[in-house]
Length: 173
Image 1 (cartoon, one colour):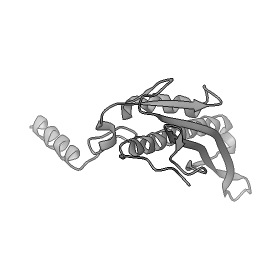
Image 2: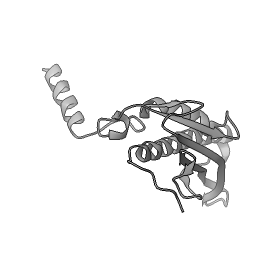
Image 3: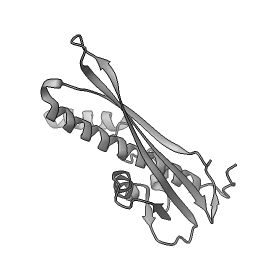
């Protein structure tokens, strides 16, 4: 009887479209298309955003190459992190911080830039800060930053994959 209940619950859960955040579920049509090649250009080859981007390439069936036959190039300019107070407790000490992470990038095809010159991906998160547990708060901040970088990488790769499926990219203005 328990097996039947578990089976029914699993089918119900999968039927509602639920999937793990960050995973390419069945509804992500961009992840299911044919593989493409992409040249990634950046000043810092080992930045955390680049590492998150490279980890997500397989999900979107994108291969990093030095020269691309398809002609698509992703250029990452800079990563900007802004940290500001989001909440103050009754003791007049900071109780929450807001992190805003932005990455400027360009996508080009055969040497022509196809995204606007000021294109950026932006993510913001708020986390609670406990003065009495500064070490735990620092670890939480690192965890939040890692998740933000992963989300930025996936946003950029979805944009690249979306632009690669369009017939003839037009030049940005």
